Length: 534
Image (cartoon, rainbow, N blue to C red; front, side, top):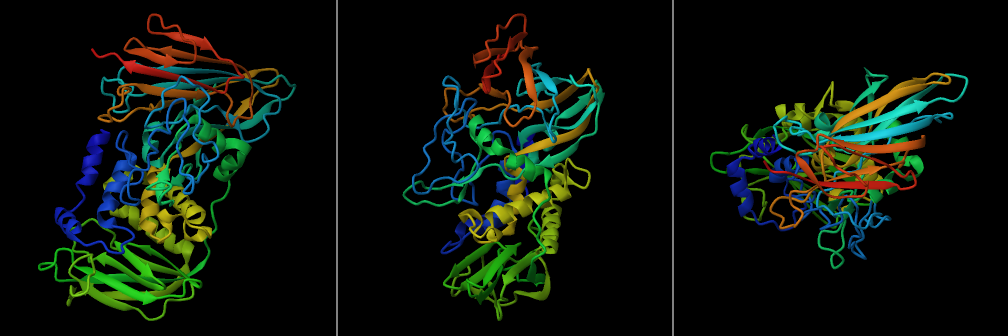
């Protein structure tokens, strides 16, 4: 299913545009986005197809081995050190014998509460169901597991205690329809609110210490990086709090009513150039394919819409601070915008207005989703699984944390291209939370159960890894939880079709089932299995 969706999305790329793109001399371009717009999102949302650098950076964002069910020490560049929540952790894990997988899915995290649990105690049982067909599309093969994370909350006090239960899970917006847990209290399904944390990863150098930069994404690669992310509770507070305020006044230049001689020039391009005082003016763009600058000179360009290519029809330059003043419009044969290749017959209407960044981001987010048509319906809609408000807030957080509004933008977003942020918001790692009320009666208990499909950690097919075909799963016992656990257990069921390849639980698999008592002082457990081929 995911591979099919990948190629459906790739089918949006116009072959003629690709041919023109490959022939363009790239000189001082900061992004080649016409092709990247389709590819970057497609590969970031598919299991086994994730490339976190891609065209936005200059290569894969994978760290080359900093991932895994157990975690491993990574080789971070000394001068171009990666930045993000896991940077201080160094990618090191706590269990020496676990495999370091190329793609890390994150651990099963424990239930917590928004308030002080007021003396409640908790027992927990986590069960992995490896029945064939656990893969979300229901096909009879083994990929991932159905996980039941069950709790008994006990109240030893003489008064009822009501808390807001928070169930955290690792994932992305793009996968939310498949991975969102289902919650039940005392056997009855409950409607749970959904909260999303900000982008949980960081950034790393494309070429290492010799050419340090922060151009590539750096995904969370081990359970210890989740530990660093959730330490202190700031990440949770951010997820439950209000999003960034973007009532910043901006000057907006909107481009419309496009015309060009497409019959003669398949990649006819419009460029707008101007000069700015970089100390007084910052520029965000949306819908543009190229950008270059030098000592206050800026030139932005876009392929003139021809009614065939799937690219934004809304094209915006958003000016923060002092306005840009005079600008020059010029048509070119293609996106190279090279001297001597100017053409006539390229035109547009430019409308200038004053607005707020909040309103402009709203416009860009909606247009970005509309541009993906039916593909976006599986990711973002007014009813979810990702609501538009959640998507827009996550984009605003990326802009204020790492973009031009951060004061110190990372290289990946330093050119102010909103298109990159809006696309990458859907595929970036984060921790999400289900929130629902639980009342535990005085002197009694309440049963809480969260069920979810859990994708595994794995090594990519054709990677040459000796661990191809293995699936890794992690569990953390108390990370980020306010509950007072008195007992935890783990179990496997319907495991006749898999064979354990490594684990730290101490399972004894008999008749397709196994269970183990967990040491509450041990923070992390791992399991690695291999499906048995029929």
